[in-house]
Length: 405
Image 1: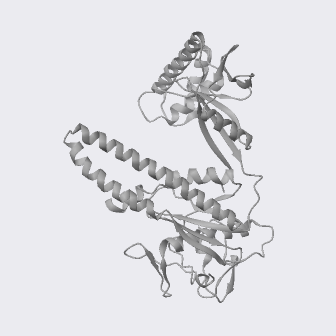
Image 2: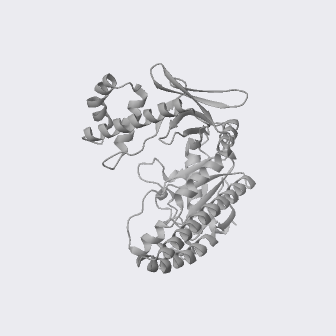
Image 3: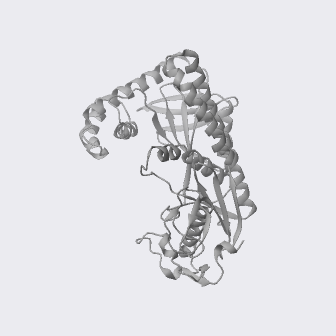
């Protein structure tokens, strides 16, 4: 389950005076110098090793506050390059940062050095309006960042502890060609199954074919081909971003319609299985989809459960046993019991089942057993051996799940 959601909004500064601009630029420049110094002293990827060797000398020889030094140290530990060209310095409320407003402006006051504070006016554009609307919706901002371009980054967060659980669960399976959806009741009855975003893969395939043709001319040094290639890639990116937002809107609306929480897989990294497979997998916009879905779920007060992807593609929803998984064409799931079903549809069903089983196991009333067929049922195989789920999570019935539509 996602405990909190985080967002970052860039706020532009408004008509800084020359003196303020010079002070902020000097502060940012010194921070980059300190970051490069620490990078040259870094001997391991452990932040405590760097902190023990560098903190005291930096605190003694520089006017930076302790929070700034620790922030720069964390940035250096994550840095993979040989030098730092830009860095965003964070300011936490209320110790070294505060906000206030006048009749005409909104200010963020940054504590740069001991007894040295700068009040930065914020431009009231669309970003600022979005920032204010999120604060009104219950989001909180406890940290602000200063970029080398003298922009203010507002880091917002929101907890979902107040969101009540809904009766049903909507499982989502993300793949390269569509988003498969399954809505289940607490007793295992399938309330709805459908697909979203089929047009995304079709449109992207046409765009990628066009990109491959343009790329051959761009490789020969054609300036017009390079410009056209850049425009085509931008168009593909914008199309995917917009359609993902529309798909997420439809999924959350369906969850509200069926009074359901949403569950998705925790996909982290795929093992390489060949050039073509890797290329298809890398085109799956899973990260974009997940971040957009997290945002919409918080706005609409829907709980988003992240479940382990263990065996969701191999579990048979008809007999409950584990099969080999996908067929040779990847689109069908086949089991020894004779059950043949669309693999994406079945995977979304498994995601919803696992979310319901986790919910029932965590509930105070452990009699809320999930129901399956009485043939070779092994629902505990959906969980790893150390997850604490046993075969008693199943209550046998004679009707296969696929027939409960």
